[in-house]
Length: 310
Image 1 (cartoon, rainbow, N blue to C red):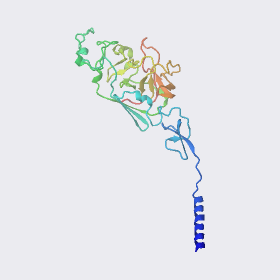
Image 2 (image 1 turned 30 degrees about the horizontal axis):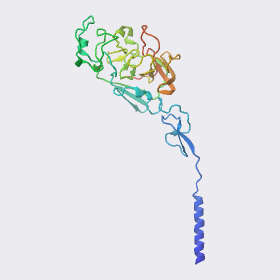
Image 3 (image 1 turned 90 degrees about the vertical axis):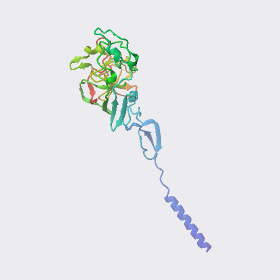
Image 4 (image 1 turned 60 degrees about the horizontal axis):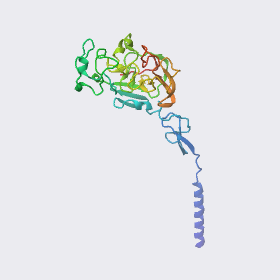
């Protein structure tokens, strides 16, 4: 009996040993994977993990100099953070960015409602009455560059509409340029629209300069809009002005503290920006004077494919 028990235990031990050997797996070969937060196929060298299989959101290379979005992938470009949150709604819809604005600016202007003052001016431009404080919009200021007599008709807050622009997440240069037209050609960070260097059909802006306020904007025919360098927030600097309807951003006259010397006919070039250190194509207000003292926002053609602002 004891021999039978011994034999049984011996066979059990050998079986267990064989089973243990069979269960031994070959160790995997680990790989270093790098985070690809902007989903552009390039990894961030600063964020990595070791794994046998490729983790979701990680890639094998570490070639991304800017993994924050930078105008590509499936995240909003960092520049959109500067667009006024009270006047804009900006979101992704597939491979497009949808930009919705109420058309109103976020700064002062004599074009905000001040009905008493605007209607109490004689033909010579003399103010006949003192404006009643109760009639003033909180952002109303007295005209400085223009006058009540020269101002365009209408107040900013008369506008009760909206604008929508859809642009590609990753805009591309077109094979040929296209000219701008009348009406909105871009959206400023303030909430109002950007226009070109024409006042009307075959009407140069010269005829309307006198109606522009201190930040180079006026009302009509639909809403308040800018033609020239908007000094409410940008004056000979590299501040973000807004986005042109082909999807490329527009900055002030300077780039990294200096006037760029490699701009194309539309004031565009590819270089680093305050929002993308890796560099991308963008426009600048060209440092060329208009009427010896102004700087037109966008006097050139679209270098990308324009999209309707509706």
